Image 1 (tube, rainbow, N blue to C red):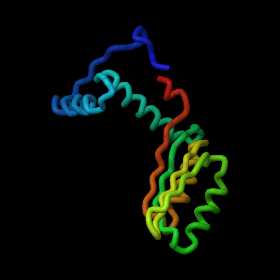
Image 2 (image 1 turned 90 degrees about the horizontal axis):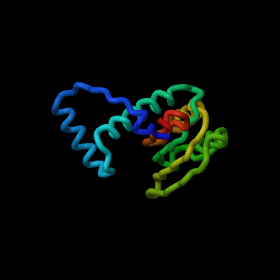
Image 3 (image 1 turned 135 degrees about the vertical axis):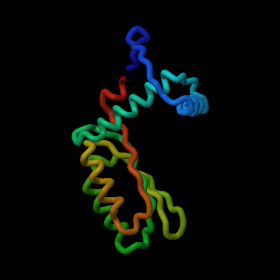
Length: 145
């Protein structure tokens, strides 16, 4: 829940003019009608969420994206085996065949941050996984500010 205008606090920040100009242009490009104050609030929330994600017990949601060559050794078996060890954290998967060798796999994940990051480390560290990225968000109070 966002603060009401009665709960808002004004403060000032000194920044270089070129940084402010670039920030204002970026805010305008977002096209959401966001003003500078809302853009700064968004950045503050993002920083709080990022910090919360570093807490091992934090509940997180996110996606794990991998591109891999399914012809590499027993990679497919290893991927399946690891994923079966994390069924509580994997909500859903999507598998896309990119070409004869390469696949894109996207996992929707949810759970304790330590377990989700552990899953990502195990999968992304396998030989044959060409690229991967875990993107997480917190599910707690930091989203309500």
